[in-house]
Length: 308
Ligand code: DGJ
Image (cartoon, rainbow, N blue to C red):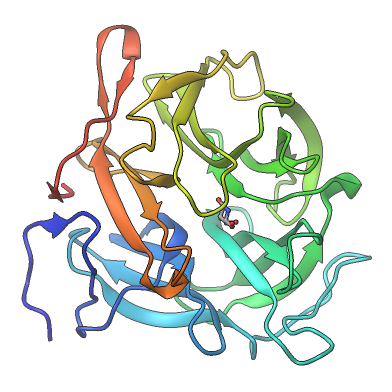
């Protein structure tokens, strides 16, 4: 067993409470019933997505591989690709899983980026569903929203429980924002096409004091680049142009998601420090997001972090 820790070293190997390496890349944290659930990519063996749970955000207990090649599949919509393995019996590729809770249906809904395991030509989004945050998710298939390409993605649930799926489209040239149906199981409307021709990926959204912030990276494969952010007063309204934040490699990171801590309201930038040569050795960097005059976000580097 790992002993209780009070800080995490950015870019170091992070282990769960059982002493095993945490595989939750390109992930997302959901707060539910007093616990935080950290979902993310796990590409080891037959795994796709794993979940870890924590009450203090510092010590993470492995709960389950929630999506694997053996996960149950269920038909949900017409024209979804329901296969979790290729025709040749190989793994497909699942990236950037995000999980939210739907109050109306009581279901936990995962959206993710799905590829064929060979290249990035499928450019589809996928959905999975579960009755509990750390139960086995049932895969509902992959599809191209309204026929569009869909790669790097994020989910955002607004204060009125309306959910939005944001993903890179047109070979990553544009970021699309889709409002989801009430059950979060389909796209209802394409509400924005953002920063056309700017090639933004790894989108992450956070809302603070009525302002929406979206961070994103440029497209350079696994190599880090300059993160930029934009703001909006209405999520489906006017978004500002892109402004640089952090240094030219964003401290060798790419955005994964933002975490707003429930009691303190503190906001953290969760990011991946990818290892393109050895994916499974990719690391995490978590930095507090501070705000200056007029809500200007500030992202400074620090070697260690205490998430509180
Ligand atoms: C950058 C993306 O953000 C990652 O999720 C992954 O798709 C890599 N590109 C692959 O090169």
